[in-house]
Image (cartoon, rainbow, N blue to C red; front, side):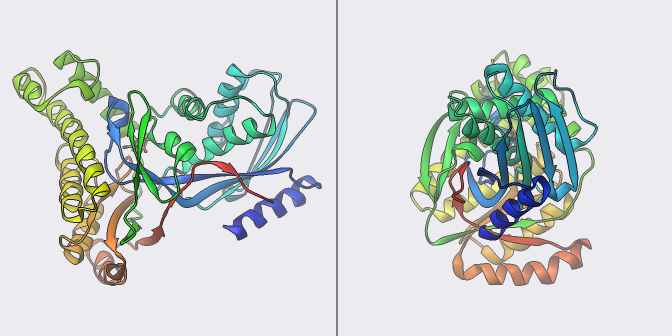
Length: 383
Ligand code: GAF
């Protein structure tokens, strides 16, 4: 981390010719269970991780915003006294969107020079987008002392992604990147945004393995899942799938397509699994946690259809080593990305060896490994 901070600071000095006055860090996240439940007003169980976006910044007295994104080799600038429009550069829209919606609530800030640099793996389902949004919002808030409540800040970032970028994500990623807690996972009720902190068991490692499967249609498939969930809720006559039960779903099964039925089944069962998993985690009941993670993975594979053959292979390889001593499942929005395993420390190396030996042989792909721990949400870094 220290190296990333130094690099961000020295890039600032090089590009702008004067030192930064602030460095903000916002983490990526891993979701232990509760996938696609957030926009159904349900439950999720993520933790923030030790991979972050860093932003070095300095206030300006005019209305200019200058941005240099080191990892995209990109530059952007715009004027806060004029309407903020979309950029042709994909990454820049996450930044512009956040400025636009912070400005909607607090117009009393002027320009900023920014350097963005980070190590959250991109497109891996570890919320690099939320880390970028939250790091920008936290930078504006901190530099200009704006009175923005952390939950409101997370919602501003979600709005930027929904309305400016066009990805209809739920609140989980922005929320945990803002409010994550060191050494804890958060059970989040995505309806009222109340949380319960759950200590991560000290006997388990959080192992994240990137399948390195890239799927071109992640956003459109994601938005389609959301529409299908809304269709199911309408047929069941409930505000959100959070309010439905399996019994209600079965009663109305013939009124919906088989696809919509299976999408709803995933959400309804996943909410139950997430609550049970939070309990199992807090009681250190690893066998139960492992069973729930396995069931969650199969539900994403068969009912929600958001896994990929290589991701399923990766889960099976890890599971064959872990047995009932831990849990493993795909994590994040899906269609590629990462799997998360909770594993006893002494099983991390055997898992790594098994994956090295079998994953490439089965899929032709090469994995990446990240050993993680739960971190605090976004904040100021001392410089
Ligand atoms: C993505 C979204 F951004 C989240 O809101 C959530 O729906 C997740 O996919 C799936 O659980 O990360």
